[in-house]
Length: 438
Image (cartoon, rainbow, N blue to C red; front, side):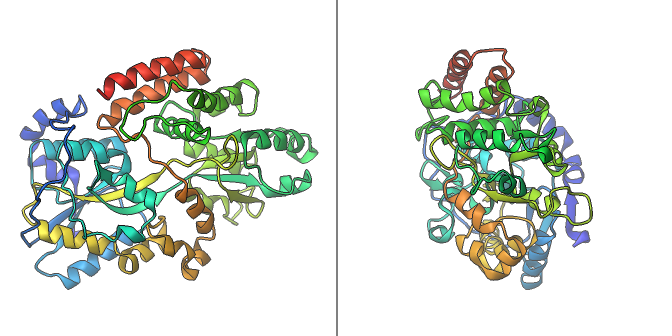
């Protein structure tokens, strides 16, 4: 596969002059020239021949193996893997640059689910034929995330949802029969657990609260778990509500009451993992990929065999996870659209690619694989994750997502650090989001 993999630096070096102009445009995040109309059009998926698949690094090796199988069976329609930087922001920038100057360098795009609306509104990706992807057998939230204005514009590739990690050994020691389902139950459990001698020096809970995309995720989950939304089904902001205030107050009061460690204000996923893995936390909200390192039996994890997982808590019952994951989309500028479509179908097929993906490192988009004995034997947390995914919601489906998430981060961070009261922060957020979604 090495001879067919090319990096984004190599390819873009040949178009440096053109991308200078695109960089200037990208700095504004792109402009949707026809954001109000449906993307559904009579796209003609014709043309067969070599194509390029552009994606972030394939650490698991699953994508490489699937591409090798495709190439062996399609010698005249070979796929070249173009590897983008690890940074999501840099990935998005390179994809936008390519689209703005209408290069045919990128054929099939691996898109973060939060980019869907932006790329579809700008017509940088094509709506897919109605019968191309078996969406009826996929987890509904993954299909929703790949849909823009009632048109499927991406093929769900892999997904992700939040898990609630907890110290089962300490719950047992405190006489607590079941993990908490609500924030109030978690607070009550912590009061009992932190009084135990074996819990000396521990803190109750952490999520991810640094001013980063992770804060948008945690804020959106808190609001949804309190019965609110960040934007409604039409994309209009809805954060000046009692539910949104209740959700944000969960985070604000967590710091104010000492439920969260003070340094959690700097936490991203990795910092939270280290704190939990080192035995400093009772509860943690995080992603499934941490399960392996927390379970390591080589001495690196102090909680191996001591923790368990469930759904994140809410205000009246289990909470609502934010959906993560990726979709595959097709560039309108690739000449070999027929090959691109067939490759996307092959790459996201249940038995061909998705089971391999599930056995490597990612959560598949087909619910059946979460109950497949071979998969569950290797990924024992999958049934719990499926529950989380079935209740998951995407982050705001808006065209100007970059500016939107920045506004959310700024105001949520101001509230949890005490720079603004909750009402002011949410009113300011509502005003910013209203301007961005006009």
